[in-house]
Image (cartoon, rainbow, N blue to C red; front, side, top):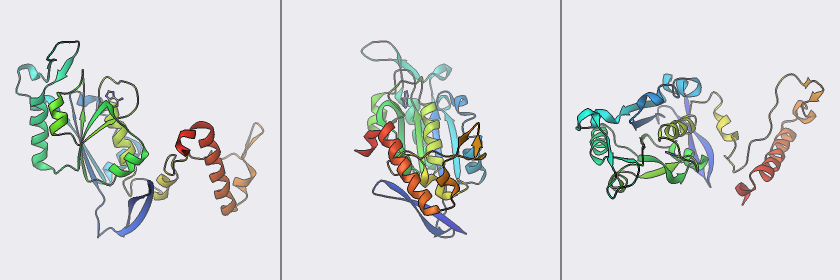
Amino acid sequence: MKCAIPMIIQNSLFLVQYSILDLLCSMKIDILSVVPNLLDSPFSHSILKRARDKGLLEVNVINLRDHTTYARAQVDDYAFGGGAGMVMMIEPLVNAIEALQKGTDYDEIIFLTPDGETFNQKMANQLSLKSNLLLICGHYKGIDQRVREHFITKEISIGDYVLSGGELGAAVLVDAIGRLIPGVLNDETSALTDSFQDNLLAPPVYTRPEEFRGWKVPDILLSGNHKLIEEWRHEQSVKRTEERRPDLLD
Ligand code: ADE
């Protein structure tokens, strides 16, 4: 059995085939959260469910409150210096991270935060090559800065807006990364034709019927000429990118 390994060359994703005996392609993602129930569903359906069922992806959600020594499972406190909002305390976070590190050598410990680096396809490609990731979900006004300085290896935002916590951001990362793990998608080349893989948006797609209310599928797609179809798709990708995301072409 062959296993396709993603490789990034000049920011583009390529798949290189190796024997499954040479490399076991699987990834573990641990997520540390104060509201673990928020993540009950996102990994239990569709492509990510298949990835987990096939043993290609393991996702564990860990409750931060299981690692606090404070009364009533407290994990946050008032900010030194005053101001509105609570801050996640250093001790429960460090207890949890160090307990998890006893069992796993993480490639990256990622903090989801609106002031992190904005997530994009290139980052998803790079992270899909890792074996073990720990995602830390922030809440309230954030986490004690000392955790960021001493434990976090990457800080990621999923966009310029503020969510009520990092959980939905973590779900976005797991989805974008998990589908790139070799063997997860049915047709392994399909990730290669995704929008952004070549810094281009994907071209328009059509399926049956060929005509609906007089609206026809472009003739070229019915021609059977694969070379011309690929050329048309590329032209459409460029046109769509110029119209919608000219910044990607810079
Ligand atoms: N937590 C709150 N807002 C966030 C964002 N935009 N990205 C990642 N984590 C967040």
